[in-house]
Image (spheres, one colour):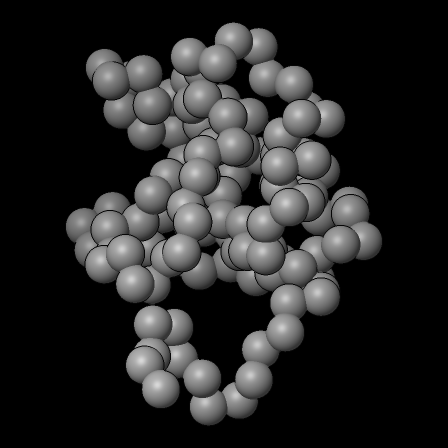
Amino acid sequence: MPGRPYRPSTYFSDVKWLWRYEDGPMDCDKVMDSAGQSDIVLTAPHFIGEVRSKEDLDNHHNAEFAERLSGTRAFADPFASRWGGFEPVEVVVFVKKTLACRLGEQAGASP
């Protein structure tokens, strides 16, 4: 589902794909359960990707996934952001309501 953004590993502690076409038919309950174990979930509902490399198959369910995730009580209302330099893609970000963030902290910051 969500693509892996290019960033140094200090920014993302555990990036994982929730589903890929190689996994077989998508099990919505399993994907939603995995998403529910995450603090932050990214997806690109309208992104198709390269058909030659079968990215379209990985991204086929993104819009449905975003809609399902929007209907859960575990996540705050999502916000959209455009990522990319040449052909920006809308990425929808879901943040778990129980995620504790303290002002002044930065991802990857050392004490």
